[in-house]
Every structure is written in structure tokens, then in C-alpha cells.
Length: 384
Image 1 (cartoon, helix red, strand yellow):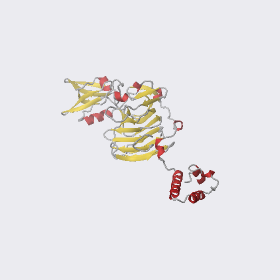
Image 2: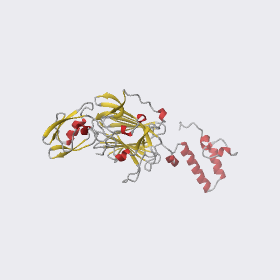
Image 3: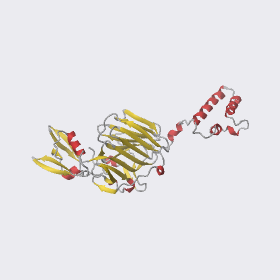
Image 4: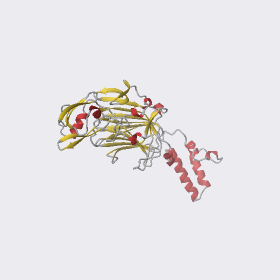
């Protein structure tokens, strides 16, 4: 209790106005004895017990129930995951002006087919630091993600006055609660670092989802959460069935919690899901990772052949002339034996180079060149 600098008398005065009574001395025990002398009935003894309990719970900083109605503000959340499965989540509840300043990246705002409207800095082979600074966005079309459905796009907007991307939850027809979703446009490897800078009091529940065949969920519970106390942070795997770590974030502090994955986690897709009744803003989103090319081609097995099931409009596959029904013969000179091998060959390709593929259409073999990216605009997007 060394952290308390106030005396017992000063603390007590916040709960009972006894300092103003002429019969009270300055001694803490005398106050309690006075209550005992004045009231000898069972009611008085009960009151004494309650009074002492309230006083000491207050001194010890007991979290009274009314705290649940207070707003909790998560200013930023960061996730770091290493190849060996060790990870860390950093939740910052300090005011925005106390957060660490993000250093400028070497390449300013771009409008590339692969990264879209982002600042980019190359930090290794196929490894980049990408920043989406929403204060510089003017149109929603600058956020290019083929993982976003039209309904998902209807819950987000660029607010030039607030310099942020605003998530406004709506209630889908098949769900009993409101939500908004933001799908990151690119897949990346299992060694990554992400930071999301937030605006507004977090009254709902925010979830950061990372998934391929596995699933990692990081949940931040706001002030109106029916599930957990405000400020609770949970890290779980396999849809929440395996809780890896859990903590309650302290107010106006930088909170850290470590975790260890139970299984291998290779290729990552990333999505933010926000459930609540009030909007929340994202001012910027930073990702450092080994980014994997996206070509917008869905494959299927037909006997021993790999064929194109679907080509998503506006993607590099569509722009290169790939069509549904094409047989995939080679990728960068290698003949894949199954869909998993084909997808791995595409993911391992260089995002800065064109990828040659051979397809068979109507008995003729053709070579097509795929450019990484070519992510569709919102009006063209469709869910896989």
C-alpha cells in the first residue's frame, strides 16, 4: 500500500463526513470506537462492519460495479508474431498525444496495383513495411480488398474531417447484433507486426482475426460489453476454443501480454471485426510482413487436372486473360501436382515480378503473364 500517499483520515473523509463532528478525534481507531459507543444495537454493529469494509475496499482500489459504465479508450493495438509461434499483443490506453510517433516511410503515398493507396518501405526480400494513413485517403475506393463484400463496404467510410476510416456497425439480417468488418487486402507470412491506431471510446467489442487453416482471435472488450469487464483482452486459437492469454488493460498505460501458438501458422489473412452500437475510427494501419501475391484465381481439381473454377473481376488473373475452365499446366515453369502445390507456387512468387503460367484452352497451350495485385475496386469486389 506504499502507493497511497493519503492518510487514513483523508481517505475516510471521502466516504463518511465524520471529520466535521466535534466529538471526533484525529485518530482512525477513535472514529470507529465512536460509532460503536453511539450505536450498540445490531443495526449499528452491522453498519460498522459495512463501513469498515467500504473503507478498506476503497483504500485497496476495489473495482466497484459502476466502473462498468465508464468508457474505456484503446488508443492503439499492436500484434507481433514470430516464426516460432511466440507472439505479443500491445494494447495502449494512453491519450493519442502520448503515443510514439510513427516514423515516415521511404516511399510516400502510392496507388500501386498491389498495395493500393499506401506508404511503402522495403525492409527485406518480399518484406515490406506498409502504412495506410487514412488522413490522406479521400475516397473509399483507395481501400482495395477483394475480401470485402458490398455489405462490408457499406459499414465503412472515409471521414475527411476526422482524418480516419470510420466503422459504423449495422445489423445483418441473419445476426442478432450490429457489426462492421474491415478485411485487409493482402495475405502475408507468419512473421509479422501490425499496429492499428484507433479513435473514439471503445464501447463495443473489437476483434482482430488472423486465419488460414488455423485461426487466431484477439478481442478487446469495451465499456458496454456484455461478455467481459471493460478493458479485457483475450488471445485465443481455433475460434476461441483455446484461450492462450487473458488480461485486463490498465487505463492510460502501455499494456503488454505474451502468448505462444499451439500449432504452425503459415499464411495469414487479416480482418478487423467491430461489434457495437456506436462508430469507431481507425486513423492508420501499419503492417510489416512478407507479403504474398494475390492473383484472384480460384482453382479446382477435375480428375487429375487442375482447372480454373473462377476468376475475380479486376484482379491480375482477369487482366492477364485467365478464364474459367482453363487447365493450369505450369506455374513459373513448374507443373503442380495438386491445388495446394499450385497455390504455394503462386504465394512464393516475387511480388515485384510478373509470374508466367501456362494454361490449356480448347486444346491450345498459351503462356500468360500475371502481375501481382490488380485488386478490384469496391464495385467489382466479390467474396470468395
